[in-house]
Image (cartoon, rainbow, N blue to C red; front, side, top):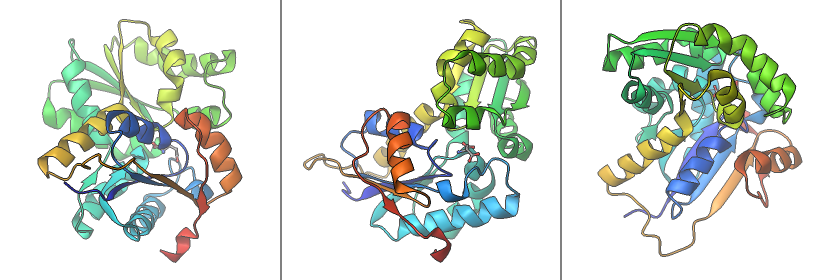
Length: 268
Ligand code: DGL
């Protein structure tokens, strides 16, 4: 047993979809969340910048008393996970492996689609993770840069969201995939819209949910679950406006964020 918190970071607000999945699956665990909204989006930045940010975000979380780090951002997982895993002495969970494994399990016709930020898609990491598990799987990729600003605008289920999703996804549907990995923190919020475009024959993999399951497995393997005797505590930090984080973050999380604190992340 270990009652310290789990540290979770993302480029901004999207990682709250991963946090939400962890809260629901592991309600006894205390969590520290850092959203780097001041430097978001990561998905269109260079590899150098993303690696630098990933190290700073990790060092910030390590300044708290934590037992595990969750890289909730797909783009940071794609470029930074391997580096931080070998640089810090703490268990680290990322979002790509769990999403890839769930897709391999779900596909019947061995045709899988992956959507994500331009950074995540061009890293090739999802393709490697899926084909390492099953080389015979044919993968179609699509970078969907407009989906992140759409979600940030709160346009999750309107006509514009549907139109943009169609533009990105109809060519992928034409490739006869039966499984689609939502390889970006923001996409679970577009679940209904993406479902409408892809139809009920295509299984949508929410990598946030899969990551929460991976966190649970690792806590159990390491025997470091919270004993659940005290109520879980949630602390939120952002590198941008606290007011904006609280307002938008509460809608991403689907529950009220009572307070958040501003961080000067360049100090880390
Ligand atoms: N968190 C990012 C991801 O999952 C999406 C937002 C961004 O580009 O910063 O890749």
